[in-house]
Length: 348
Image 1 (tube, rainbow, N blue to C red):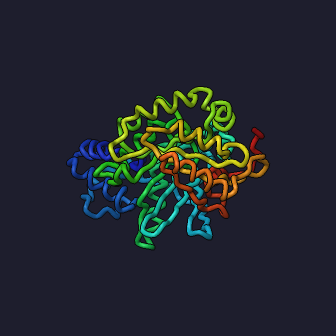
Image 2 (cartoon, one colour):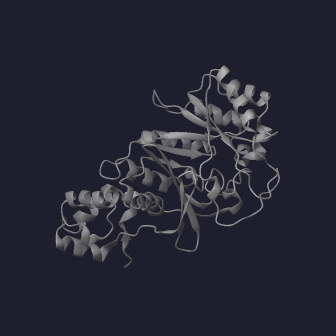
Image 3 (cartoon, helix red, strand yellow):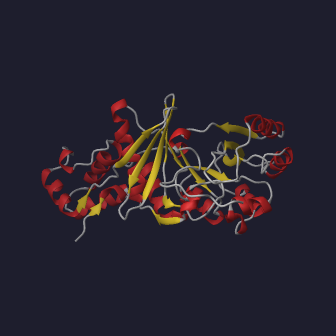
């Protein structure tokens, strides 16, 4: 009988496991604390658990956490962690420090099946969904790495490889582990899930766990968004934005609309004015992102002056608009760059 990996179990399931081994539910909560809070993965090191319970547990379960195959530091302080998965796939996570804030960008799939024109991960196609243990394992591995600095990841963004909402059951399991009092105990306000716009799953997600939502917009017309983000053919702009208006957003929360700035493609004055109209009266903010060029792609990033002019139009239209500076560009860890090999993106 194969042993279960405890890293992918909910705290409630760890309690059930403890009861099944003749112990109290409290022992399951202790187990969760050791794994998810203290990043201790050796059952023998969990010294407040009874010896007979640890022995019985070792026959039924393992604590298997991803080990970084490679760690690459950036000049800006970011670090890219590359993990080799069972079956040969590879994924990446990125640690991004900012004063007392430490953000970890995690992956939810090996590859991605949505083929956005500005994203190298989409060139891979979808290899497979990650398990909850593999997603949670990225956080545990990062925290273990940060222990020497006396730090932990304070914010989690699901903006790495893959579309989180296309791996929904494992995403919810992961978020439950992260936000549970007996799990990682991370506030949902410190977690952001990015989506290319899978409309049916957006409301489902926020009704289950009120995390922050980031929606990849990138265009102000259906014709252009069809080319940049092909999911638009299934959920066109009017359907996507109508869904956003009706999402169960908490009173002080806002949707983030991500907009990659592409020179001569979506960065005109007309685009900015259309964006103001599209997002009018929406509980949202716009995150303008510098495009990180990919080998073989005809796309180019907008000059900073054009991005700032675009931002000014949005602000004059009473939209909150920020500019996201690229992090990890020198180590291919910036937005849209996560991939194990080089491929040539198709022209749009």
